[in-house]
Structure formats: C-alpha cells, structure tokens
Length: 150
Length: 150
Length: 150
Image (tube, rainbow over all chains, first blue to last red):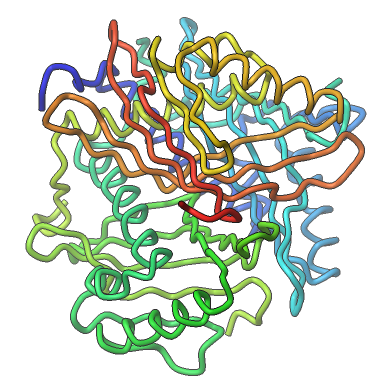
C-alpha cells in the first residue's frame, strides 16, 4: 500500500471504534427483543437517558429499565417489531477517559402482517465509559428530528 | 489515550469485524445488481439460505442462484431497484472456527421514476466460514419482521 | 481463535476502513447540519460532485459549497431535517494511492412535527485521497435509484 493511503488512526482508536459498533449492535438488540434488564445493564448504575421527547431524563438503571419495559409492553400488545439502527458513528476519546460517540438513529417499525416503515429519525449523543472492561453508557441524549431540539 | 478507554478486542477480532462488514457490502451489492452467480459464490457449495417467508430453505449454490435470479428478473421487469442493508452487526467467533454474525437487515426499494421506501425489515443470523482465505456463508437464516418468526 | 477464522486484511486496510467510516460520519453530519463550509472542505480544492440528478457535476469547493447552501436553505425554510446515511461500505485502495469507496446512501427526511420517511436511495462511488494527513473526496458520483443511471 502506498504512503498516500496510510491510515492515521492509532491501533487503540481503531479497536475502540469497532468495539463501539459491536456494543451498539448488542445493546439495541436487547432493547428490540424486550430484554430490558440486559438493556438497563448497558448503562452505568447512575446512567442517564435524556430525550427531547421526554420532559425529564430517566436517571439510573431502574428508571431506564422501567421506561424500556413500558415501551416493550406497548409494542408487544400492538404486535409491532421495532429495530433501532445506529449508524454514521463518530467516536471521540476524551482526555478524562470517557468517550463521546455521536450517531444517527433510525427506528424501523413493522406490524405483524403489515408494512415496515421508518418510525423515527434521531440524532444520538452518548458519553461512554469503561467499567470492569466493558463499555457502558453514562449519558445518552436522543434528539428526535420531528420535535424541537430543546 | 488513557487506560480507561483502552479497547479490549484482540487484533484478530477487530480485523474480522471489519472483514465481515466489507464482505456484506460486497455480497449484498452482488444481489442488488443481479450478479446472481457471484452472489451464489458467497455461500459455501452446500450453503443454506432459510427464511420464515419460504416453506423450505434453499440448499446449495444452484438453488441459491436460482432463487436470486427469479427475484432479480421480477424486480427488473417491475423497474425496481432494491438495496439490502445489513447493519448493527455482531460478530462472534466460535470454538469450531466458524463465525456467527447477527445483523439487522432492511430492504429499500425504489421504482424507476417513483418513491423510495422501506420494503422489509428483517433479522439475519449467519454462520460464516473461511474457505481458501475468503469468508463464505454456510448458513443464513432471515426472519422477516412482518411474518411470524417460525 | 482458531486458524479458520483468522482475518486476512492487513492492518493498514483495517485502519483505513475504520477511518473511512469515521470520515463519512463526520462529513455527512456537516451537510445535514448545514455546515456547508466544513462540508466543502471535505472535498479536495478541485473536487468533483456528480449526480445523475444534475445535468453537470459541481467542480471545486466553491461550487460544492454553493450547492449545499442552496439545499440547506431550502430545507430550513421547509422545516425539514435530513440525515444522509452511507452504509454497506467497500473500501479499495488503488495502486496510485487513491481509494475507491463504494457505498449505499439513503436519505431520511423528517418535517418538524411530521413523519420521518425515506426520501431517496442512492448508490455512491467516491475516489478519496489523502492530503495533509486527512482523507478528502476527489470525486463523488451519486446515482439516485429513482432516476436512470445514464
């Protein structure tokens, strides 16, 4: 490979980027499969989930799990399978050891026997940290594109 | 980079994850461009393609190519360009040397002169193997979200 | 990890693939946030942006910025947030030191207070080069799936 195409990222940055992608794949599957305890455990114990669709952030795993359970129950009753896609990921390690990860999020919903469609498009900003070797979300801020940003 | 953000994946795992992403990009483009022979060759000779939309799995490259040709012919007649996206990929190397790769799949369809839309949302579980240096699909199980899982 | 799952990509190829993904995440966010100067600077000074939707390619950063500004202004007036997703990326380093990157592109549009939907599905072929350490687009060819490819 010629000099011109040499990539500039460090080995650590590359490994981290791939790890974040794997983490998101696993994390959102927990949510979409209604595995709400495992979903909550992808946040830190005091993790925060904020969204411009909610008046107040959910704080802590118990609140995050309760929110996910409510949504999962409603979707199951409606016979809707949701899939959360995170993409266009940017991973920026911070001096304090945390990681800011920005991504686009799109939610695809499919009713049983019906037609798949885009339900929502969002902007997602995470602060990730490592605890006991694993990445966890310390803060997630989701901005739905159909609602005012603040 | 501080200790806290050190990624934990091995170099081999990272390389494999990227390779699977590249493989999927190439493989699904074969399908979407109607290159059905090249598509069939991304499966092992005895590869299996199963879907909850089909009563029986397609077994072997000949059957897989025939299925793809039928779909490509129908779409060409209808003037529809399909694009298969696989995302939210999770790659898990197995003790036997195979690789389980789970992903979400969304199919975008666009009629010539018409409007793009989500055609289908699916869950995709692959068993990949390496033959002669290249990744191949030995088993693919696709679950359309609009149909019962079994 | 057994021999069978050893990935075959070189360390440079892997790093480059991840770098292209990060680059696309950053680049398209510039466009979607209306940061048109920063967007234009992700192209080489003489960069070309061609599309089967346009009679002539935009040539050079000034033209590329002007095109983006026009689109951003129109979308802002309409209250529409667009998100450009590039996925299914294939990265192929060339002997001359440039990089051919093929991807699928989908544009999700959301009107404020309205419903998100797929606006467009496209095929995207880039020629990337490295200048001063950073990846830049020297040529981008976008093929909208709803229009003849030419």
